[in-house]
Length: 408
Ligand code: PLP
Image (cartoon, rainbow, N blue to C red; front, side):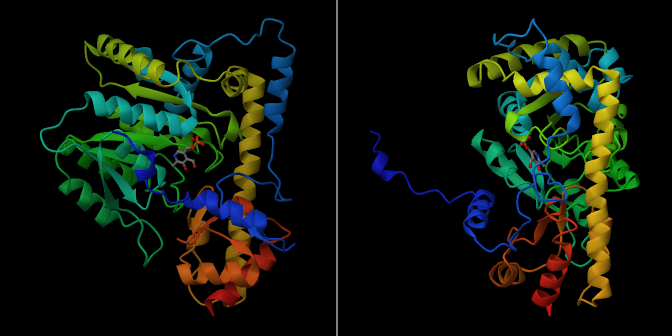
């Protein structure tokens, strides 16, 4: 029989614990480099101007109501999401080889994909999902919660603070045939290190050779480089190569819609005469999974994204907003690197500008991270990751000096 007294205490979520500690700190100089959310130059959350415009459009629409969305979500949102990630002229869309469901942001999309694979993806040996080491920590619990075992492939080189490409390829090569290989489409979290296009091609070759199943997590399209097509390059390349794949897409960062939970899950099958019917069977099963978990997704965030994605002028405005965010982050990278180099801070700092997206893996040790927190009220995760968006023209000097002090 069930006895709730036997339920053990679970550890606190590391990131949300860090946020709480930051809020408790009363020092006016405190710096928050923990959470992966964009901040403007005054360290404030930024509502994208294009989102405000979309909200105006929605407010004036006399036909809007609060009825349920369909199980698969807002159709004009999911179809625009397909075009955004695969490109408007993708053969996978024309050949109806893709099915898409609106999800509870990127997390919900990863979960729906993992749940679907847990039911329908069968392998000869134990079914295993491989994640980069390190990865977004939630990957582990999302997959293990649906009964898929998890493993890692090497990714980050502590020496170069870049990609351990040999290690990555070697590990994917030696994984049991048919493993699920989870890949960050761009702006890898937490390292900010992405494969080059040549390296992606080799990764695709090995995945094909070993009959693995690639699973893309794309949470930063447009946010990384400021260019939507560029940030979707790897996914589009894999689709061109004919892979069957899952794509988990988040609009949290690139629209600043974090709390609205707007995301999309896509299943794409390989070209074949049977593809359309395969996809329609997959869609029917995904609908049952979605129904049992959330019935139907929330409307507000998807309506905002859809309003922008389906309007030429708003779309162009969105692209400008994306360049504002990615540009400010790139400026902060340049400033931080040059301040550390000018001060002669021990170590090499080229990786700060070579990494991309929201995060930088600084190479600071856990001890140095704790020292920064105690001495300088700077908050970052223990692995030395900083959210670049937490830096701005008002605190970057202070932060660079704090790092200098901590590593000497
Ligand atoms: N995947 C990665 C790699 C992420 O970094 C994040 C957010 O930090 C997500 C997925 C999911 O985010 P959300 O559920 O807020 O869309």
